[in-house]
Length: 419
Ligand code: NAD
Image (cartoon, rainbow, N blue to C red; front, side):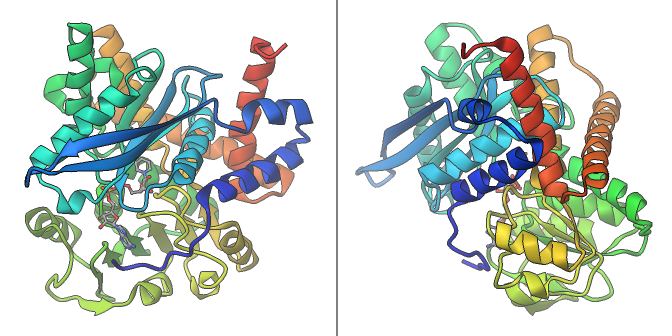
């Protein structure tokens, strides 16, 4: 697999980022103890009959980091490198993220250590259903609501919703978000993360006085988040000069035709060999001369060893945790403007919230209504984070964490749930 990743523990990064923001907030020790660590951690074994008849045992997790501000909320990841610590980190970030965009959810995450690219659809379905049964005591529309993440999609959510509903005897669409439209999914959910990334890039460009039209863009990771962000940037007149997925990095200094590349990726499953592009290495891709870099794959992509090579003016974290604290320090020294993950990619959970509200109300909204609401939420959150960044003279990451952690701290104090 293509990689620039460093082997840093994502949960250590999450805790370090928490401490940095809590220190500036001067958060007292008691409150830190109450909100910093996961509330519930479940490790399960998922035995699955594979197509060749043998039983394979998968390790899987569901972590609820916080339910202080509402039901826990967070995606499910299928990937060979899923570990408990990674899931804990992702659950922690979900808590602060939901608070940054001020939606009434806490944070959670799930993951199965598996290689979905080498599994058939029936194997994936059996694994998903068995995993759902295993985490059943934790999930529910008022408790904990899963959604798609890396290598899971609306079909995965449909299987979870069906398995959960079978145990209750009636359909409960609100148990997951990111469902197909025919099962109570929301218009706009599929493109929500990338659209939110786009809105925050628009805000950053406006703040920095950088015209989006003609800006050179590099997108690392061409999945759900990366393709939609690339497409919207392309439509806005930006020039997407390089794109990568887990197999290849493609580059054209005059710009890549993104709708055609998406068409090819849909047909073939990869970006390799796209006409009029040259192949470059993952390191070269991150070091390209550009205005906007969008890491949209996995954690720890930009770190202390390669951050100095990044030349982008704006780094928009579509992925969760793509920059390590060491990478952050170097980017800050080099005056790169980082739109931190818990702000940048919060469009996904925001439209998940809209989907949950629609399911609960049995009343569905029009696409334009959803886009308008999403734009308002993302731009308000950007303004709130930027105000802390400029007033308190802290990095955008610390500012976003201060906003999220501050709101959770306030909620926990008002609830008084820990006398
Ligand atoms: P996805 O499975 O749709 O896409 C992941 C993409 O990354 C794939 O194209 C894959 O080929 C590529 N990839 C994997 N390893 C790579 C590597 N080393 N170099 C380059 N590309 C690589 O997943 P997604 O939903 O788009 O998620 C991507 C990131 O965005 C994750 O960090 C995820 O947590 C985050 N995110 C997703 C959502 C969402 O709603 N889907 C919401 C918030 C955050």
